[in-house]
Image 1 (cartoon, one colour):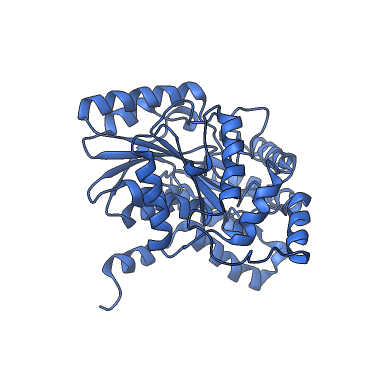
Image 2 (cartoon, one colour):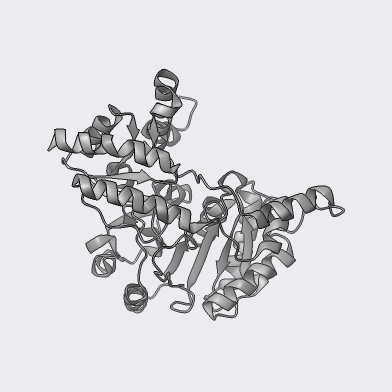
Length: 393
């Protein structure tokens, strides 16, 4: 066999998200795009805010000399400084540009962080339901994912995490607001988690890092607070992107930040910068970096996603579906009316409704709806959701 056996296996697994999305492409060809209600892919429907286009136009019409050349692998110092200033203001921790590395999206950021801290045989704890690519990111560096189910209402099960920490645990990877549940982990829970980590560090005599994946941080509803981990735990890293809050998923721009008080933080940052080269990223896109420097805390209109959430929750609630109302992001993770979540998703497909089974996120008996779609798609899909629920119950 010429292809790697591991990659052959992974390719054969094809994530449910992409599988349903690709099936949807074929379905749209057969019945027409306007008759397919595609909730499979978390592909932001909202375009970037006007501030983005203002800066884009300015840079295109009045380019700075050399602005498309190589820069430091960590990114432009002035861009890193601007991001550090926002982080310092919002977290109360004295983050500087030396703590920030510009990345090719959050996926690129997580990989340079994990490669910097993991040795062969280390373990990384992740919470189910999880973003499925975490499994591959962790495997990339010879480590093993240890999966801990979420607790009540998809909050962190700190007791379960504590019991799963072993002498091989090197990191805990969390995601809040969460994909696929839309849940935001409260500060009280994060403080309990940090207490459990500190106890485990004393017990095993080794460092354990907390890595927070935060691409949905600025997509929050109902005045919910999304706490920062930097004020709570020093040995921590934040990874994020502008894919969701600025509607730039195709541009692959983000950053990774290491707490300035993190043990061996300088060496970790040096490792992350080296990894930008070693993994072939080289540097984050120059044009996007230049734009980010100037638009501060700008976001898409989050109220539009809130309206879509409310439309969907009202319609599914009336039909009898059980779910935790999302506090952020743009996903709803509903309980399947039957145990076989894959079979239920297939029933929805008969109504041209595309969703993703919870099995694809390590949590069977549920299914995910990505509601970053047009309002009309939600409204037209509700009768189909109701029909399938009634027929299957």
